[in-house]
Image (cartoon, rainbow, N blue to C red; front, side, top):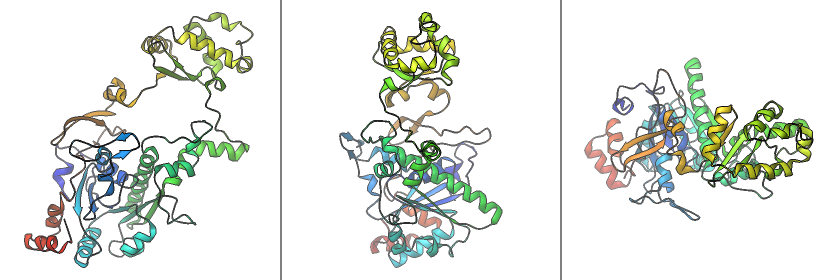
Amino acid sequence: MNEKRNNDDGKLFPLQGIRVLEYGVFHAGPGAAAILGDLGAEVIKIETLAGDPARFWTRLGRLDMTMPNGDNATFHYSNRNKRSLCLDIKSVRGRKIFEKLVARSDVFLTNVRQSTKKKLGIDYQALKDLNPRMIHANVSGYGPQGAMSDLGAFDPLGLARSGLAYATGAPDPKLMHIGLLDQATSIAASHAVITALFARERSGTGQEVHISLYSTGQWLNGIALMINSLLGIDPIVPEERTTHPPLRNRYLCKDGKWLICTHHPEEKYWSLFCETIGQKQWLSDPRFADTENRRKNQAELITLLDGIFMTRTSGEWMEIFIEKGLMFCPVQRVPEILEDPQALDNGYMVDYDDPGFGRLRIAGYPVHFSGHSAGTRSLAPGLGQHTREVLSELGYSEEEMEEFKKEGVVR
């Protein structure tokens, strides 16, 4: 493997020495390999000669994701920490190169459809004899069994099938932007791979693992599903603020920014909250003195609170609530997170110097290790950027590489 890539600064990475071979497109799938790369794995991304279509998918409705060099900005997140090998695995010589890589890899990860895997000969049954210790990781839309097992899917379809499109409580289904379920599926897939690698340490053999957008969506929705199973009710409550308790609600402040709060149990915090906002008289007001009456008069109470919160800015209120130990939080938009001191202090956002794009601020790895490092080591590679490098590591000569290029085996 490429030691320099994993150990540039003398840092130790948890998955250093693990090689991941990816044959995937878009994010759910490739995103999992990127996470494994955050943890130090060497990741080789096999692309067709045309390239991963995510490279060129730059518009989503009104959102233009085109970078100055023509790349799709999201592609750099999905494919960080990877090397790109452009290879036609359907050709005879391309297949031999692919099989050499399979034999030397710890993980093979793909998110193409079942029928496509079988057609290309990259399903578990086709590859397991080449490398019995390899983990064969699959990401799909709806799972490996059933009538929908060979259907393609994207993030919105997984949100819809799993019930998450109604998670906001709005009467109409809402999409959550951008790629949230794709990213959750990538996290789940990386979790599955790491678990299988751990099991291999004990058993000595590899196995196939499978995760889907649908299964991940159900996992995220697990609390709601349990409530429904036990109580027979739909737990997704209406989104209107007046239907939510005052201490589990959101409020617009003088500066046009929102604060949100959550306090359980409410009775424990009600007295302190009333005193903090200068409404101590509510403690003896029969409309608001106890939980049951507050529930009956909730709409009136929320209206009164709206007026109170508009008397100060969100920052002023936050100072007051933090001092009193009340659990409020600003509702931030994406640009604010990039400058959030809490994110910067914890390394949740980090500065990153890229030779092509200069200094960027990107999401850091969300876990702290006392003895290891983790995080982005490189942004996404150019199409076929590392083809010669990878082929050289496999023992191919310059003459052979030129032949591959002329024959259309590689790009």
